[in-house]
Length: 308
Image 1 (tube, rainbow, N blue to C red):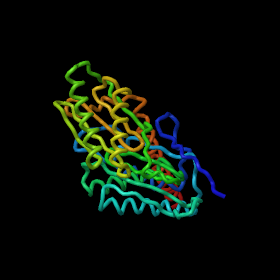
Image 2: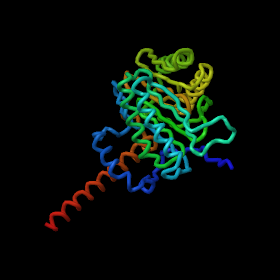
Image 3: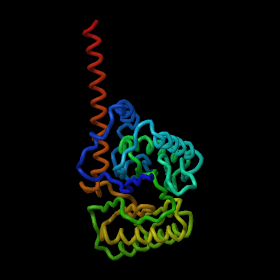
Image 4: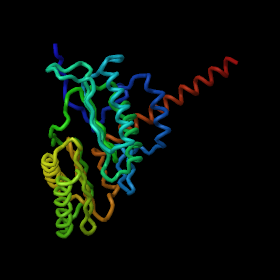
């Protein structure tokens, strides 16, 4: 019997804590992750050169896989393949444990990763390594997950999503500052039009500028040029409708994203409380888990000292 599984992802943008989802065996690895990241995990600093490890959003499926299952084995192979491949190329997709029959195997898993188009291969590899580590933290034992960092993106599912157009909004951020300047809107619209046309017709990535307005856009590598153009057209439209006269804005759809900002940089003050919640939630988790790990170590030292 074929088991149908939920395809819905729960995106972390609420006040709900994730601590109750973390198995105890992850605590030690999280402790190491906390210190190795050097507290650079906090979101939304858009100064250039880019901080590729900065967390933007994540989503997890409701369904959980069992430990020591075939899916877990294939999942580990997928993540290993992503890290290995990222040292050679900035995009790749994978299908593991699937066959040609109409019934999807229990262990089937599909995935992809992609780095930002202007990221060097070495930096891409580091970003993917960070993303792979953080997927374990944000979405433990999930049948499907997606995670967007500033410089790269990873996604895996139990079903085949590769090459299928998805223009649903996954994340948006509008600056608190706005503009009523006619010249700003003209420049912004020129940048958005150039990004839409250039990324759709080229390699899926486009940087553009007009005066003090800058921006870039990118499609996932599994999209055709036609679908990329359609996705970016939808993304540009949502930037305008959802963020209005904002001086800076991001919108991430299922398979593409677009961003613009004014005055030559993306202002850190543009983060609103609701948009910042995803990154804060993950940062709080890491801090709390690290504190617990330190407490365990101190208690262990004290017990040994008292025993002596």
